Amino acid sequence: MILFQERELQAEVPDFERGGFRPATLVHRVDPLFGHGTRLIEGAKLTPGAVELGSVVERDGFCPFCADTIGDATAPFPEEIARNGRIIVGNAWVVPNVIAYSSASAVGVYDVSRHFLPLTAMTREVVYDVLLAIQQHATAVRAQHPELIYSSVNANYLPPSGSSLIHPHIQSSHDSIPLGAQSRLLLASKQHLDSYGQPYFEELIALEDAQSQRMVAHMDPFVWLVPFAPSGFYEVWALAPGLGDLIELSDPDVYQLASGLALVLATYEQIGVQSFNFSLIGATPDSRDYGASLLFRIVARSPMEPYYRSDVTYFERLCLETMIDYSPEEWAQTLRSNFGTTMTG
Image 1 (cartoon, rainbow, N blue to C red):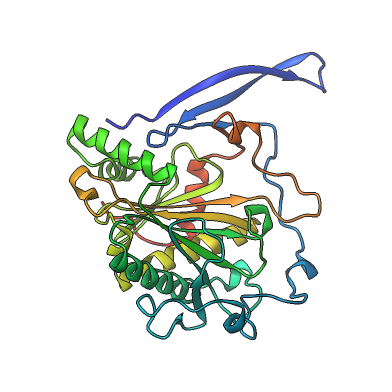
Image 2 (cartoon, one colour):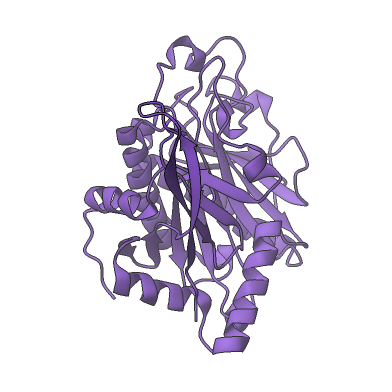
């Protein structure tokens, strides 16, 4: 029912050793959920290695998210959102967003006591605190504004990902209209259920369990895997087929998500990745009626060099095709070794 479409494309490239041209093969894949194309290419290294961050990540002057400034530099929430005006879990703070990206949004700071957190410091406890705090904000927002049924939690880490601040943080979004990815998720889920009578993610998990090439781990309620056709470098998904709306996440669910995310970040550190984006998109309160579920996605970005090469080209931005230089199946194998979790069907 879910079709993994793959096609070999034949090309020729200059042969500098023998002269003339030699044959080359690239593989084209199509993501069955979102519909974008991915090109797996050979003979090039598109993902540059890690660089020394040095003084770039040191605090130089004012930072609104550090402990000595965040109280004055950010506004308190209304009492109906946070009784004391603040949402604080451990060293994590959630504060109102100063830019209106959505009808309701907030910024979650991982740790106000440290201006910069390298990936090695993104432990599950640190990640859990900020995710739990942003989840508490989401629950409060939905209680006051039940019409804002499209919720998500997103992150940019370091400037190559689009972040405007070095101090690591995440952001939430709550609207009465869906994000583009949410719209596609909901539409594709409904169409799949109508056509085949089975929720998309349940079928996808069963297929990946059977093949065991891109499956990484089962960490109830999340299932971690590498997508068949990634939308960027070293992409990882976490599916939650039993959960639809973002505010359905319990504290133990958030802890499991944090545990898996910390393992992905540790693997990123191991292979030299320094920047990333992630997005946790919720479906809607009635999403179970048509099989839509929560989806977490994380993708690596280029390292932060003075004149770094962006990983987003005309292929990704305008042509809706992604170029990657590694096998998703090999990436899944690397992740499995770090997760160390027995896969269950």
